[in-house]
Length: 82
Image (cartoon, rainbow, N blue to C red; front, side, top):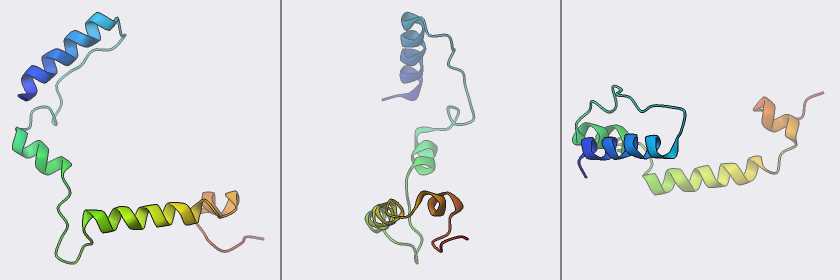
């Protein structure tokens, strides 16, 4: 869908809902569809993990950090503090 049409639909929806903010143009909205896709997409480098591998690692890391005491999660360390 053309971004301009989407933008105008968004502005109309905001107005109809009575929301207290207004959609405006940004550097991102000024990009072409191709530029936005490149900006939002994930293109791993030659030595980087695939998107699927990165997501698996993030899930494993998230599960592990959920098992740490709160003070260790906040401090970013995995060693107990005294």
